[in-house]
Length: 292
Ligand code: BG6
Image 1 (spheres, rainbow, N blue to C red):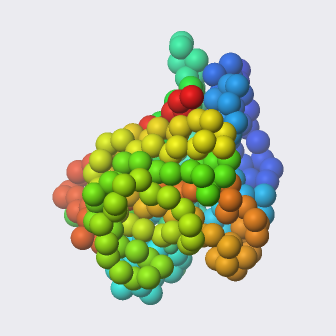
Image 2: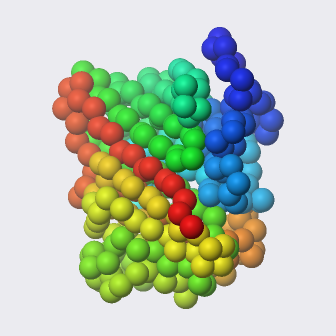
Image 3: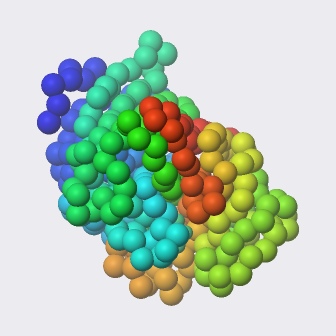
């Protein structure tokens, strides 16, 4: 699986999928090679910060429901709406482990990579195959997620997202700050609007906000904590909760699990798709921490 020698605190796992389990004084966590998928992160003494469905499927060709699915190179069905697989292929591919270490201060770094040429041509669509993806994960009291795209010899255009699922005590009491005043497209009603105050949840919520705002906060009174999310390199934020009917309609999502989660995603889609010239790189990141 890997020739790397892992330091104490990091263990290879192979079930339900191959990956690395993290267990250090600062945090526990789990990263799968399938999709370079961060499935769990729990700073010591805290409740889990990432939400992971008990109904998730762990199979080749299927996305994990929860944690941090990567969206690349198209969001949803792409601008035309007809592209498959939904949200692109990066979350379905087997990534290569490049590095896994613990710093002198006890923070874990795990780096994974995927070359465009390694992607199943049937899934690649019109995407050229000469580019490289890297996912750098740093886990300690803070979680840093960095998705780095490097173009090959020709320019590329792509959409991308860190589709992060957060655990909350009760979505009905929770709110998200950081997109006040931002224009949005509502994917449920297909209408536009402008956000008035913090986002509160009273029904299915699926909005793409035009927002480069560095800082967002999930206020979670039920669990007495605030999740702070800083982002870089992202022009839009998606906020998603499927609520009752959509949860029931998804086979890999428990009927009642919607009460305990919200997605706050850093994305670049549609007019904000990224265009890279030859050999150019683009970094998009989320840095996540907890406050009480
Ligand atoms: C969000 C989209 O990013 O992802 C939603 O805005 C979508 O429309 C959700 O339902 C989940 O997507 P998937 O493919 O993981 O079920």
